[in-house]
Length: 128
Image (tube, rainbow, N blue to C red; front, side, top):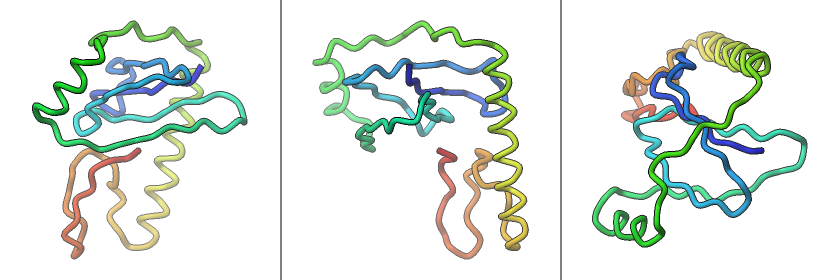
């Protein structure tokens, strides 16, 4: 029942695509362009290998050799459960922003701005 949740706009559920993650699945996602999180029901741990790759001919060949499926149907989920999950995620983001602001830091982490971290020279790239 695990799935990766992808969004073009992190605050707009209408841009959401859900990718089923059955055991043994191999999935390539452009996480530089999409907001992403994984949802897994239950208390048992779920393990995966996450690898970051540079786009290029080698990656394209690797993907092509595995007979990729470029589009999938998003699994349907209970709308009430989804709304509860959206509200819980928003509450966590608000709590995190408040904690960061209380430390005197920029609370916009994860807002997609890729703003430079103050004085660190590091980019904020992902919320996941």
